[in-house]
Image (tube, one colour):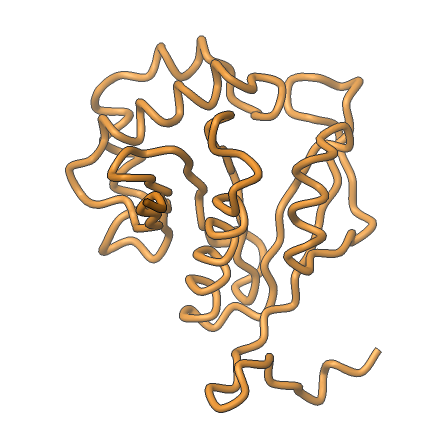
Length: 186
Protein backbone atom coordinates (compact mmCIF):
# COMPACT_ATOMS: atom_id res chain seq x y z
CA UNK A 1 0.00 0.00 0.00
CA UNK A 2 1.31 3.44 -0.96
CA UNK A 3 1.96 5.83 1.90
CA UNK A 4 -0.62 8.56 2.49
CA UNK A 5 1.15 11.88 1.74
CA UNK A 6 -0.25 15.28 2.59
CA UNK A 7 0.91 18.90 2.71
CA UNK A 8 -1.08 21.24 4.92
CA UNK A 9 -0.80 24.61 6.61
CA UNK A 10 0.29 24.89 10.21
CA UNK A 11 -2.77 25.64 12.32
CA UNK A 12 -3.29 27.93 15.32
CA UNK A 13 -2.41 26.11 18.51
CA UNK A 14 0.34 24.01 16.88
CA UNK A 15 3.32 25.80 18.42
CA UNK A 16 4.65 22.50 19.79
CA UNK A 17 4.57 20.97 16.28
CA UNK A 18 6.46 23.95 14.87
CA UNK A 19 8.99 23.64 17.71
CA UNK A 20 9.43 19.89 17.19
CA UNK A 21 9.95 20.23 13.44
CA UNK A 22 12.34 23.14 13.79
CA UNK A 23 14.43 21.31 16.40
CA UNK A 24 14.54 18.18 14.21
CA UNK A 25 15.70 20.29 11.27
CA UNK A 26 18.39 22.05 13.28
CA UNK A 27 19.67 18.75 14.71
CA UNK A 28 19.72 17.09 11.29
CA UNK A 29 21.20 19.89 9.17
CA UNK A 30 22.50 22.69 11.41
CA UNK A 31 24.73 24.02 8.64
CA UNK A 32 21.73 24.86 6.44
CA UNK A 33 19.93 27.30 8.73
CA UNK A 34 20.71 30.79 9.97
CA UNK A 35 19.35 29.91 13.41
CA UNK A 36 21.34 27.61 15.68
CA UNK A 37 19.96 24.74 17.72
CA UNK A 38 21.04 26.58 20.89
CA UNK A 39 19.05 29.67 19.85
CA UNK A 40 15.97 27.58 19.12
CA UNK A 41 16.26 25.69 22.41
CA UNK A 42 16.48 29.02 24.26
CA UNK A 43 13.22 30.28 22.72
CA UNK A 44 10.48 30.42 25.34
CA UNK A 45 7.04 28.90 24.97
CA UNK A 46 5.73 32.41 24.36
CA UNK A 47 8.36 32.82 21.66
CA UNK A 48 7.20 29.64 19.88
CA UNK A 49 3.61 30.76 20.18
CA UNK A 50 4.49 34.17 18.70
CA UNK A 51 6.33 32.49 15.81
CA UNK A 52 3.32 30.25 15.21
CA UNK A 53 0.96 33.25 15.27
CA UNK A 54 3.11 34.94 12.61
CA UNK A 55 2.48 32.10 10.12
CA UNK A 56 -1.16 31.09 10.74
CA UNK A 57 -4.43 32.94 10.01
CA UNK A 58 -5.11 35.81 10.22
CA UNK A 59 -1.47 36.33 9.17
CA UNK A 60 -0.93 36.29 5.41
CA UNK A 61 2.29 34.33 5.92
CA UNK A 62 2.30 30.55 6.29
CA UNK A 63 4.18 27.44 7.31
CA UNK A 64 3.46 24.23 5.44
CA UNK A 65 3.86 20.78 6.97
CA UNK A 66 4.44 17.62 4.95
CA UNK A 67 3.00 14.47 6.48
CA UNK A 68 3.35 10.80 5.60
CA UNK A 69 0.72 8.54 7.13
CA UNK A 70 -0.16 11.38 9.49
CA UNK A 71 3.38 11.88 10.80
CA UNK A 72 5.13 15.24 10.15
CA UNK A 73 8.21 14.74 7.95
CA UNK A 74 8.97 18.19 6.55
CA UNK A 75 8.24 21.88 6.67
CA UNK A 76 8.75 25.18 4.89
CA UNK A 77 7.94 28.83 5.59
CA UNK A 78 6.08 31.06 3.11
CA UNK A 79 6.90 34.66 3.96
CA UNK A 80 6.35 38.15 2.64
CA UNK A 81 9.41 39.98 1.38
CA UNK A 82 10.01 42.98 3.63
CA UNK A 83 11.22 45.16 0.75
CA UNK A 84 8.96 44.24 -2.19
CA UNK A 85 5.23 43.52 -1.89
CA UNK A 86 5.18 41.58 -5.19
CA UNK A 87 7.73 39.08 -3.83
CA UNK A 88 7.09 36.06 -1.64
CA UNK A 89 9.90 34.24 0.18
CA UNK A 90 10.43 30.53 0.67
CA UNK A 91 12.56 29.74 3.71
CA UNK A 92 13.49 27.20 6.33
CA UNK A 93 12.83 24.18 4.08
CA UNK A 94 13.50 20.80 5.68
CA UNK A 95 12.59 17.20 4.88
CA UNK A 96 13.40 14.28 7.19
CA UNK A 97 16.36 12.27 5.87
CA UNK A 98 14.35 9.05 5.50
CA UNK A 99 11.79 10.89 3.34
CA UNK A 100 14.17 12.65 0.95
CA UNK A 101 14.02 11.89 -2.79
CA UNK A 102 10.34 10.99 -2.47
CA UNK A 103 8.86 14.19 -3.93
CA UNK A 104 8.14 15.79 -0.56
CA UNK A 105 10.48 18.74 -1.08
CA UNK A 106 8.83 19.51 -4.41
CA UNK A 107 5.37 19.27 -2.81
CA UNK A 108 6.44 21.80 -0.17
CA UNK A 109 7.82 24.15 -2.85
CA UNK A 110 4.55 23.86 -4.77
CA UNK A 111 2.54 24.70 -1.63
CA UNK A 112 4.55 27.91 -1.22
CA UNK A 113 4.13 28.71 -4.90
CA UNK A 114 0.33 28.36 -4.63
CA UNK A 115 0.37 30.51 -1.48
CA UNK A 116 2.30 33.20 -3.39
CA UNK A 117 -0.04 33.03 -6.39
CA UNK A 118 -3.08 33.36 -4.14
CA UNK A 119 -1.58 36.54 -2.69
CA UNK A 120 -0.78 37.94 -6.15
CA UNK A 121 2.99 37.65 -5.71
CA UNK A 122 4.77 37.97 -9.06
CA UNK A 123 8.00 36.41 -7.79
CA UNK A 124 8.98 33.75 -5.30
CA UNK A 125 12.53 34.04 -3.99
CA UNK A 126 14.78 32.16 -1.62
CA UNK A 127 18.33 32.05 -0.31
CA UNK A 128 20.29 28.81 -0.49
CA UNK A 129 23.86 27.98 0.55
CA UNK A 130 26.24 27.49 -2.37
CA UNK A 131 27.39 24.21 -0.85
CA UNK A 132 23.81 22.86 -0.60
CA UNK A 133 23.84 21.01 -3.93
CA UNK A 134 20.71 18.95 -3.23
CA UNK A 135 18.72 22.04 -2.29
CA UNK A 136 19.89 23.97 -5.34
CA UNK A 137 19.00 21.07 -7.65
CA UNK A 138 15.51 20.85 -6.14
CA UNK A 139 14.93 24.57 -6.63
CA UNK A 140 16.27 24.46 -10.18
CA UNK A 141 13.90 21.57 -11.01
CA UNK A 142 11.07 23.73 -9.65
CA UNK A 143 12.07 26.51 -12.08
CA UNK A 144 14.07 28.81 -9.81
CA UNK A 145 16.99 30.67 -11.36
CA UNK A 146 19.92 32.49 -9.80
CA UNK A 147 19.39 36.24 -9.48
CA UNK A 148 23.09 37.08 -9.17
CA UNK A 149 22.64 38.31 -5.59
CA UNK A 150 24.77 36.70 -2.93
CA UNK A 151 25.83 37.39 0.63
CA UNK A 152 27.55 35.78 3.58
CA UNK A 153 25.72 33.00 5.37
CA UNK A 154 24.24 34.28 8.67
CA UNK A 155 26.77 33.56 11.40
CA UNK A 156 29.45 32.22 9.02
CA UNK A 157 31.23 34.84 6.95
CA UNK A 158 33.22 32.15 5.10
CA UNK A 159 30.11 30.60 3.52
CA UNK A 160 28.07 32.16 0.74
CA UNK A 161 24.34 32.03 0.11
CA UNK A 162 22.83 32.87 -3.27
CA UNK A 163 19.40 34.14 -4.13
CA UNK A 164 17.12 32.27 -6.51
CA UNK A 165 13.93 33.56 -8.13
CA UNK A 166 10.86 31.96 -9.68
CA UNK A 167 8.59 34.14 -11.78
CA UNK A 168 5.14 33.26 -10.54
CA UNK A 169 2.46 33.00 -13.21
CA UNK A 170 -1.02 31.62 -12.71
CA UNK A 171 -1.91 28.40 -14.49
CA UNK A 172 -4.44 28.35 -17.30
CA UNK A 173 -7.12 26.03 -15.89
CA UNK A 174 -7.98 24.63 -19.35
CA UNK A 175 -4.45 23.60 -20.31
CA UNK A 176 -2.67 23.28 -16.96
CA UNK A 177 0.13 25.40 -18.43
CA UNK A 178 1.41 28.64 -16.97
CA UNK A 179 -0.29 31.61 -18.56
CA UNK A 180 2.10 33.69 -20.64
CA UNK A 181 2.14 37.40 -20.04
CA UNK A 182 3.61 40.36 -21.82
CA UNK A 183 6.37 40.52 -19.19
CA UNK A 184 7.54 37.01 -20.07
CA UNK A 185 9.62 38.16 -23.04
CA UNK A 186 13.31 38.09 -22.24
